[in-house]
Amino acid sequence: MQRLVNEFIGTFFLVFTICVAAVYGKAGDYAPIAIGTVLVAVVYAGGHISKAHYNPAVSLAFLIRGCYISAKEMFSFMGVQFLGAVVAALLAASFFKGDMEVSAAEISIAPALVGEFLFTFLLVWVIMNVATAKAITGNQFYGIAIGFTVIAAIYSVGDISLAVLNPAVAAALTMVGKLSPGQIWIPIAGSISGAVAAVVIFNTAHPSEECSTSDDSTCRPIDEE
Image 1: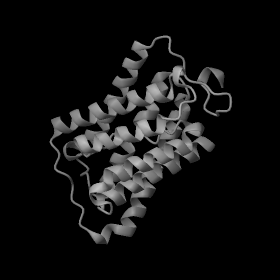
Image 2 (image 1 turned 90 degrees about the vertical axis):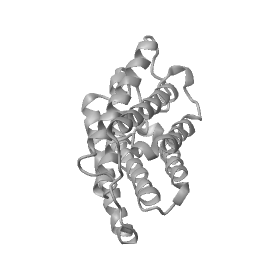
Image 3 (image 1 turned 135 degrees about the vertical axis):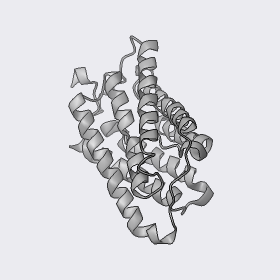
Image 4 (image 1 turned 60 degrees about the vertical axis):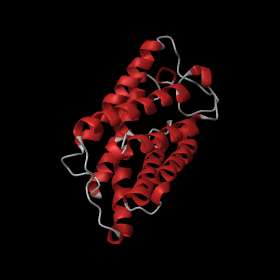
């Protein structure tokens, strides 16, 4: 239960920040920094509890990686991630919907798919390296690496694909009108395929790499739980 509560809280604050800072424009040009910074915060806050996924594509990647999560728990994670995203979107809309008219982004399918694939690939590749590799057990840079990757993604492909990188975020953006219902499949397909490609390549390149462990961590590899 502790892991699920953490996934809900982290996803909620990530999505609420995205909606308020970017969709409703309250952070202006600083929206990417606001989003990346809150991600750094919630990753550090919950990394020792649930590995701080806050993203169904990342949860799937951890399952394929083979540690920290079972198939049953992955679906539970995904459920609370989508729930946190929905609650955040509803709350943000109730606060700020009257402040501005939100219109769906104009997205070209092929460039958007490529952008979502590439930067979700990078995000998951970074996570696998900084949060699961035994060689970096006990490191203190993992949150910054993950948050800065998202900042880079927003600045790089935000105008192309919105740099969603997360199916739960895609659902929230559809709810607040930033994505049309007909567009939601683009970030979902791009993020899932990018995440799967990243972890498959990581596992292939590191066939003997063990998951990082910590004696005081509640996030144990599956075979040690």
